Length: 241
Image (cartoon, rainbow, N blue to C red; front, side, top):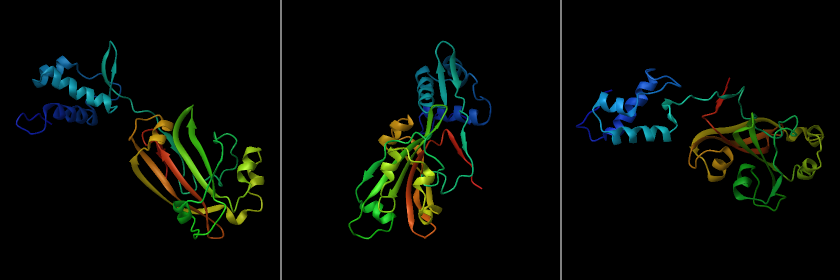
């Protein structure tokens, strides 16, 4: 790629793409120091403010990083946490063997809600509402994702109290065989993080996250759980097979 001084694209934007192209082509590898501002100015016949703006945007995007007193380096992509055998049940609360070590937040009771009622195929009748369970995907004290599960309070009337008292998962699910998930319909999409998600995941607002949401079905064919997940695509790798 060469810079086109007759283009309507500003020179700093062209330089930005040139540096990205060099990184993609391996001219500058991960962890490598890129040429100094003065070197780029001389090589490409650019002004220092133009070079500085291009580098500032790449630093803001996380492609480059400035090490004080040393120079500007290509950012090293972090090792991704692998989630093996990813499927609709991967983040199901009812599919867990135990919940003691997942960082489960205090369980909340949610009143009937039109959106949740539609997900659970519940008609417009008075019912007991839902339990909302939330927990982080953690590894080495770093948050990789945030899980939210909704479970019918009519089917599991004492779920909140059972968890608060430390009741074992095997006992919570006892005699609920037909209401445990065996399959699901979950969609994946990339979208901007909501403000709460950005705070929890420790990312800037509106950063793109990988969102998974949908319904899980029990052996009786009815919806037994509705899940909403936000994942950091820059830190995770999903294995689907």
